[in-house]
Image 1 (cartoon, rainbow, N blue to C red):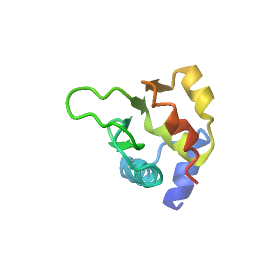
Image 2 (cartoon, rainbow, N blue to C red):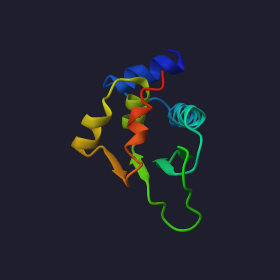
Image 3 (cartoon, helix red, strand yellow):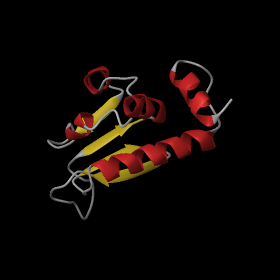
Image 4 (cartoon, one colour):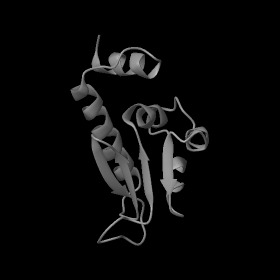
Length: 112
């Protein structure tokens, strides 16, 4: 099975693909997000794989940023591919979105 097929099967409830496949997909999707909305006012974290800053506006330089989105890899990839709705993910608690600018990430999804 190809890497995209492994990811699709996982997002549909199947077995997890190798960690390297998940890591690559998370990094690529976060890079696409940063390209779509360059900036440093919101930090999107997908531990333990990657984090990126995006969305134009004031940036933070020390400590915890005021606008943070954090979730697990499976939830993030479902959001990025359109398999999960931002509002539903936030409401269910699978996505933590803190700060006034964090919800702007939801308006940028899905990425494909």
